[in-house]
Image (cartoon, rainbow, N blue to C red; front, side):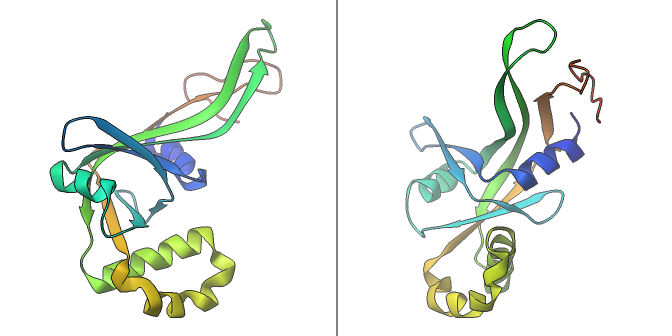
Length: 164
């Protein structure tokens, strides 16, 4: 599926798994609450120190993956056991944001995505915790891609980017 489909999956997923590389070369994947700013930029927040920060310092390349609408099903036509799902994948480069205005913008976007009804508390939260909060920006290095398995109302699998 195309980038527009993949962005829709990323935007709807409750979390996105970000895969890093540890300094010793071992993989490290963790589900995080990301927000997308535009066609190339994602943000997440976290602690100033820890495994994610060590990974970024060692190797800034990351991979993103997300799944939505995942449900086991029996194939309507052939009775096969399968899953219906929508998924998205992307690769990018992670960097720690140091600019105060960009950190606040990223946190505002995160809050608008996950807690839009509590924006009245945003400024106070920034005052309390901005200096002890890390913001990481992921810049995509190529457009994301997506996959899906979905059946139409007649029980036919929708293939080749067919949408309903």
